[in-house]
Image (tube, rainbow, N blue to C red; front, side, top):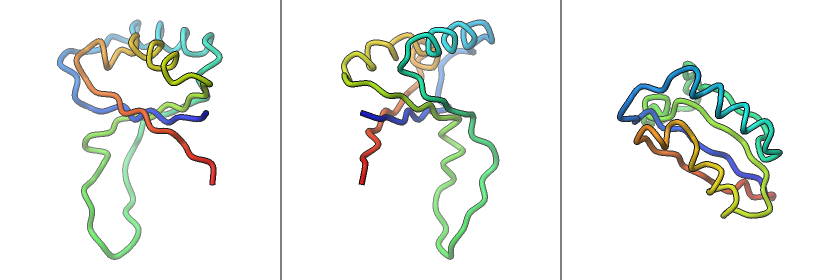
Length: 95
């Protein structure tokens, strides 16, 4: 199953570069991690105004796992979660 993880900008404490480096090293070695990125500036297309998600979402990561429980267990080590912030894991449905 494919998943996307939205990383919220709501941590209680600063995350060090070494914490991020360690987590990304573990992610790359886990065989679960499929890539991701910080989210930059937004360009709104269309007529309707909507809330700017870049105010609350700072990045995303993609994962592949046959077990959502195993993935959730791995994500317990995510620096944002450890720092009191929120992660939002969504299944990517094939259509």
